Image (cartoon, rainbow, N blue to C red; front, side, top):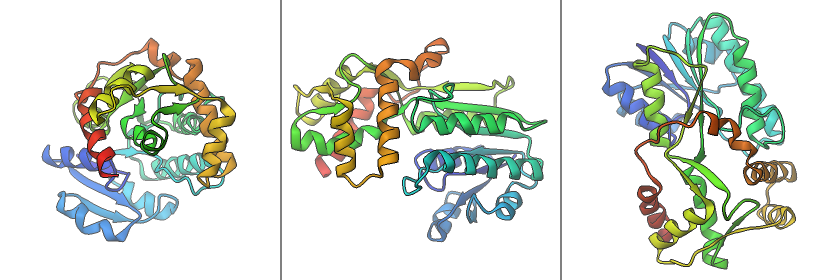
Amino acid sequence: MKIVVTGSLGNIAKPLTTQLVQRGHAVTLISSNPAKERAIQLLGAEAAIGSLHKDEFLEQVFLDADAAFCMIPPDFSQPDQLAYYESTGKAYDRAIRNSGVKRIIHLSSYGAHLSSGAGLITGSYRVEQILNKLPNIDLTHIRPGFFYYNLISFIGMIKSLGFMGAVYGGEDRLALVSPQDIADVVAEELTTRNTISAVRYVASDDRTCDEIAQILGNAIGMPDLKWLTLTEDQVMSNLLATGMRKETASMLVELGMAIHGGKLREDFDKHSPLFGKVSLEIYADEFARIFHDK
């Protein structure tokens, strides 16, 4: 198969590309960074260097492809995150329509069943709605949980304050996921699935914030580590102090409150997937290495 992968050499795209190449598929990997062309070629893939927002470029890359993995690259420099999601979704829409590619895997998120009140995840909802209108394609939305590597953002807090804290915490549950497990599911969907589902959830583990703090704390030598639930004002102030745009910070707080209230995972709990290979205990070793290197 001829498969297009977006996401450059990121945490999902790189292992996904490696798997697909090893299975004998012809992979074209899109990156906006010309400096990554050689590294992409070393994976055995063809490099397509350009912007997802350049219609002619994206359409040309998709032309004659059998399938495509479409993700929205994170870009917190964008002043309007939801508009950025929508514009990227519309770029995919045009390229898919004009190229004729028939199998599409879209990287969405758990919580994307919500049309509002989910912060940045509302962007995933809107992209899903855009792609759902495409005719004559086989479309699957992959909805992963909370990425393990998001926990790295707490390292500075742990080192300076001795605890983890967000507007969610304590007994609030997080469906956790490893990029490797996402790559495994996407590869399966692209190459071996006979039955195509509209939505597929992906998770590697499912723990309370208290359990996460305990396991990470043991791994880094802080067995009494706690995950505290902070107020919205406290978290907002902390985010703004880092130089984050107010609009983006507000969306992150809103997302956190959707986790705290449980609504982000309402649909996930109705369709709980089998866990992947990377448990929290396995990831904790990686977290500890990063913690001690910082």
